[in-house]
Image (cartoon, rainbow over all chains, first blue to last red; front, top):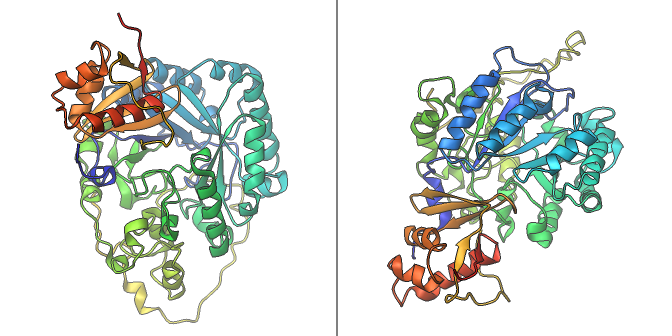
Length: 395
Length: 99
């Protein structure tokens, strides 16, 4: 039974993803400042009900155990509940992320009756003040009401998902208390500079001291608190957190977006990480198995500037999306590297962060004046450095 | 990820076992992935032989017999018992009444 460690196996990819995120729509009733998919408006090219069903059929054939459905706000799709039923009838479990807007008492009862549906409510503050500053007025009350409905319907163990920010990092015990009150499970995930998150990253991402406190808090709670494997860069502090502790992009995870485009990970909605489309010949399976981008991500990666660091075996250079969207080279340190190498690289001024490839934000602020600062600083020679140094993703 | 839990009961190789009905199995190059729809937990079978054991477990008179039929040697048996014990602890497999 001596085989290479699973992490080694997973580096080379699997026959089908373990963890597939499927964003069903870019439409959303909210405008969270850190939205990783820049959601707001529905895309007119959105997959139709028939196309969604065909994707589910394919996932069944590939034996994908479950999909993480998100958005936008997936429940605003009129066919959402039908698609959930279709997936579970075809042996594809569903975990969906929601802000709670459609979780009525009747829907909560329906969800509680299924073993194959899990619900994840987004909450980014343990108090309305902190949450609503990020997610918008009334969003805390909406989420809490949805939790009350789920708990009243007897739904045990639904997830409360929190993006850890500088503003809520001091509320971890309060989040845990909310989860315990509803018989729910707390899930903490990392803020990524993806989508609109790039605009607020500097103000929202946790400080170095907060990261350390978060790590200690997570280590003390072990498997009681889920993390979606998103804090593996913190493994450089010492012991790894529960989970696979590797970047799963294109290896064990990927993303299908509302128009059927397949990206390496949910935090990398950008042309540089576009592997193909479920609308192409061969569908999703062909993208997963044959995409050049995924093949490249599954080859052994070089640590670049990080190779000589004593922590590289633990953190493996951190999160690809976090590096990419802050303008750091993919074979360099994570912007939140616990050894401070990322902060140093950012302070030294790397390449300009890449422009987003798509934006479905509500246009409510388009008429506001845009503050512009004209820099007198001459162009930094480092600007010539491509953020994709040593990495050339295919189409 | 499966690991040996301190304090767990030693695995009983001599009684019949079966895969939990809510568990789905997906073969992979290294063995297989297991997903339990009830506990919503993922687990791994780290060798193809272990996958064979798990597959024939429900028909075999005992876990020991399933291991033997899957080609597991006497020397390898303790490691397989430990792996099955981990699967039992996470409810991926469960004891079955003798038929």
